[in-house]
Image (cartoon, rainbow, N blue to C red; front, top):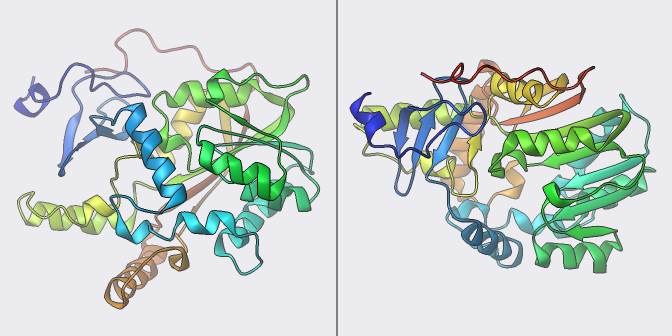
Length: 315
């Protein structure tokens, strides 16, 4: 066992394949960023407690305060159902993609937050349902949008008879402590022919490429740029390959995957940082290193593949 691996406690196993002895990718202020040697997933360790994450999301939805000042206004857009809201515009594009594959029906948004996505979907003919663990966000979903939403964890949610035509999870899977259980639960609650649609940060992005180069060039001392991307509420960092792998393990097959860029209108940026990000994002389009992923999947015929033999994914 390497010296780096000995620094990691026994619980630092890959949350997807269970492999032990991950490689140390980065060491930042509070956390280590690890590379799974089994399936390639990049993940954060140690994970904050559930109580810490619950308190963080309550704060983000109410004041916008958090460890990344650039996100201060980010969650504020979740409350505005207006045509010029960049988040509404994004939801319209995602629904365009979904509706090319499935006509409007029953839609469940996992991690629905304030309910803005469901409000947009309802206008387009979808019958909306939502679930989230953040009480403050759900209060807005009920009061402002009059949506049928449940408070709690999706794993404890029992679908009504018939299931859902589409289940969405926008920026949800990266927060999952048990990502395969989440995906399997989504698949199990689909109606026949239903779809799962997800969004998540793209680990294989221009941000990791540049921030990682600065980290290595400084001998691991320059972590500021990395800590804008690797943040405490994101436990998992998917790229196109590892996302497709997790979907397959959960009995889902990818039918559409595209790379996207964060809309800078949602970030709180000074002129200098805004210029840097616009330049990096322009380069990312050329390099195929956009910082976001959007995916649509459907259930595999016959369900998930059989699990690998014990130890097959570990080294």
